[in-house]
Amino acid sequence: MNSRVVVVGSSNTDLVVRTARLPAPGETVTGREFAVHAGGKGANQAVAAARAGAKVTFVASISRDEFGDAAVARFEKAGIDTRWIVRDSAKPSGVALIFTDRQGENMIGVALGSNEDLEASHVAAAAAAIREAGCVVAQLEVPLAAVREAALLASGFGVPMLLNPAPATRLDPELLACLALLTPNRGELAMLTGRPTRHRSDIPEAARLLRQKGVGHVIATCGAEGVCWCSDFGARWFAAPRVEAVDTVGAGDCFSGALAAALARGDSMSEAIRFAATAAAICVTRNGAQPSMPRRREILGRLEPAC
Figure 1 (cartoon, rainbow, N blue to C red):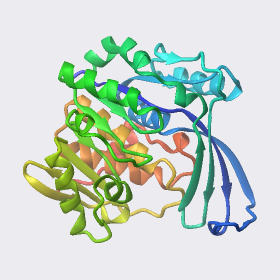
Figure 2 (tube, helix red, strand yellow):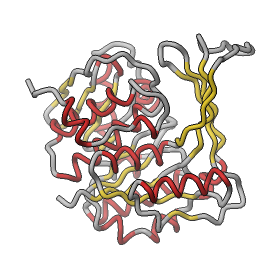
Figure 3 (cartoon, helix red, strand yellow):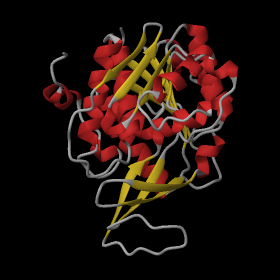
């Protein structure tokens, strides 16, 4: 395989406040730490894939402001191809406001800003890069029309399309039928299917509904319970490496980016899932989204032997 990954998605700057516990509605909780980190689900996944060894092209809409200039400079430093980043939006670059507590759990609010201006035509302009990719990745922090264009192009070129369905919303049958891989967490899986996912046994049942609509592989991330891979061969669970979580922001993005990198490299699905789960486990032991993404050699060094 060619190890090339195209990521279509969002870029944000994360403004993080660390508190002893997360605030309830209407409550003010005082925090002692504040940090500014690079974020956005698309950018997180692009950085995760690049650090996991892929040659990454990023398709995005990022304003020419202080946050946007810093983001593009970081991508270029990381070796990410930025030719298809559109920078003519009149809106400010995206910002996420994040609370994290002592257990590493979080609450996030996002102002999409220039991410809202990514159009299908911008994605179509990168068709040559998509044609040459080993995997195309998207999320739902940009307009659905852009995501749909990426999926249609990837499907037409015979390139696997991975969608991380976050923030969760119902998806139309045409889009679902184009997806080789879908990587929801259990809450997103419930939103997509309208089915409960509280119990371990609920996960394969909900995933089966999405596969009936044309999704090739549903790979549900379930935190400490592990990862459930649902395919033509049924459901298979992968254990999550045991770690002490410090910050879970970006863990799902790390998983999706590392998974895409491994598949583009030619790993089998089971190898790719184990690789991605290990990457995500390393990610949650560090603060911040993009700063926490591990490199391939580190992931391989922590990868446990297959049972």
